[in-house]
Length: 242
Length: 369
Image (cartoon, rainbow over the protein chains, first blue to last red):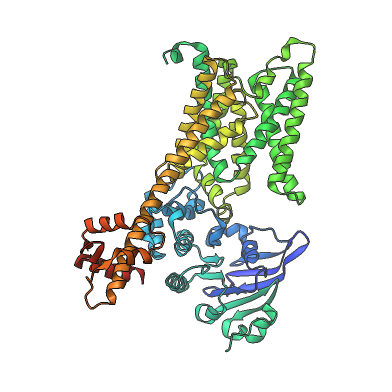
């Protein structure tokens, strides 16, 4: 079966320093995959390189066998929540509607249909009641849900998420993981940068262990081993008794 | 006021200033939200050598010729900033400062050289330093409205694309929108907005017309669309006010007068706007801290009463004072609580919770745990 995401020999360098080195990655269709690794391992860069937001020095990316550029619209992106200025003059609905801008085409503005779709996405993210809230008044967890809703409204097939659990409370974390499982149930593929090693086996089917190079990649039970984690984090992980 | 409609000069000046205010307010909003306020400053200063060179090359003082020269120089400056930050380790703000001063210096040299040329044609170019609204004629207005009109129209057509560019450029790119060309177009519109205003406000202070209306407008609204409209309104009002004052009275330089007017609008907005204004926020903060202090006194009474078998056991004011170090307004706070029916005075300087007060304490306790 065709892989949802196929990455071959991906290398990214900032100035002379390689941030990602010769990374291969194959994400099967319909799984939840975590990307884990220490700070500076290139997790965010990998996501951005797949989306062509940073230009790789070498390698290529295919989505369902086609070059990314030709099927951008089936890939949804949830950036890190800290990557934007939340004091921007907009409310929650405005931000979620941005998820439809690519589909709308030039000059057309979002209308009633689009607003209804956005409300539906907000419902899925559990924040329908915040639709008209100014975005500067949101908590961290609410900001995260707004970004999720913005990606949901795209109705993509593959989702790339950069730390969707970062700095959210326990309730929000449970809500987000429930949402990811719903997506998987609907046949979607989700790749998420993740920081909490403890929850990897609970939340994800597959895992990519990354530290500039690919250390290991595959189903969690096979790959998420003490030995591989030691290789990834340089032997600094001792707490994970399995 | 009547003069505004009958006096030709005054009408031209007011129209020109209104145009400049509207265009710079709208495009300035995007510049401010994209943290490009200083880019506006660099572009406007960089326009000076462009104006000088355009005159030297063509020998013409047609507004369109000078504005094209200014726009090209402004764009060249922007491109240079991008090249410098991309190719070296010089940071964005330093690159802006470098480009701004080099271009402005070159502009002053060129202008001085032009003034020393032996023909009368050159007079008037120095007005571009601080602006001279009184010198505006219908021909200038025509050029300004054509350029400004195009800028506003393009901004309206590409509204949602510019919105996502300003809020989350990477996300826009992931949607398949051509963010780099859009960035190029929006920066070009900013250059046009600046060039449109140069003759009226001058290169030195034009950036204020980009930053100030938008900064003031942000105080009054939380929606992008309204912010653009309010910034345009502020730009128009201060443009007209400043231009009219400077032309009709003691020949004040137009640029500085307009900038003083818009600065007034900014100060008022920062202080008095509802929601974000400093004064409203100070009042709200004061109200909140007084309320917190009252709740603390109530809880103190509750804590004291817990040591007795009756929750409404009275306690001395001195004991409460000891539990609230720095709580200077204890007596008046207690009176407010009494007026709310939460406590009652039980003897001289003795206070006790009422049954309503006990219920309120229980509620507060639940809220906080």
